[in-house]
Amino acid sequence: MSGTSAYEPAGTGHVRRARSAFTIRLWAVRHARFLEFIYDAFASVLLTLHPLWKAIGYHRVEKPVVVIESMVKSFLFDCRMCGQCALGDSGMSCPMNCPKGIRNGPCGGVRADGNCEVEADMPCVWVEAWSGSQQMKKKDNILNLQTAIDHSLRGSSSWLRATADKARAQEDSS
Ligand code: SF4
Image 1 (spheres, rainbow, N blue to C red):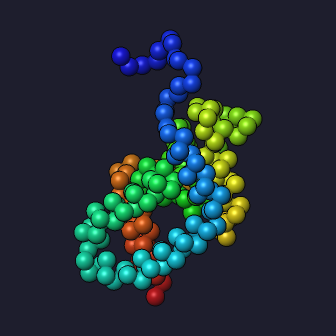
Image 2 (image 1 turned 120 degrees about the horizontal axis):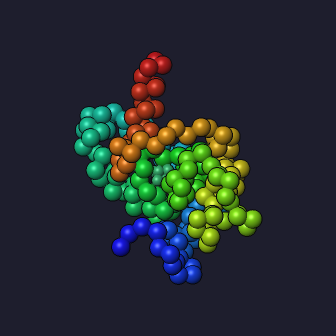
Image 3 (image 1 turned 60 degrees about the vertical axis):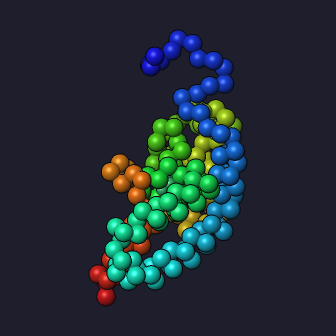
């Protein structure tokens, strides 16, 4: 049976998640500056290899890169592979873990202890985002307005998209 039930057992919510996912996710936020450094270095390597990706074809490398990206980011950030990564703007706290899917948060329902109003055990991803962003070199990125999510990009590689976008911007400016 689907729909709203008149009875909801104590401790349940709309979304059930393993608490271990919070642990690693919160570690990532606490080490946002370090992860920003690692990602920036990694992104430079990907950009340097742009001619190679172009020669092979971005569409051909997409599949293996998606497998690796999904494994790494699912482990570290509880990533949902939205395809439009905002981690660099959200203090390494993935906004897709917000039960309301808010990309420009937080909502007005954050609990007094900083937890989510929908999932009372989960720290609000946007409270965490602010905390993580303040450690980062690009701390003002959290003020960037995130555009509405394009669901057609779900499951695609943000790493490759960011690389292709940067390469195009470089080509356009030269
Ligand atoms: S913003 Fe999207 S791509 Fe980035 S970690 Fe979250 S779900 Fe994954």
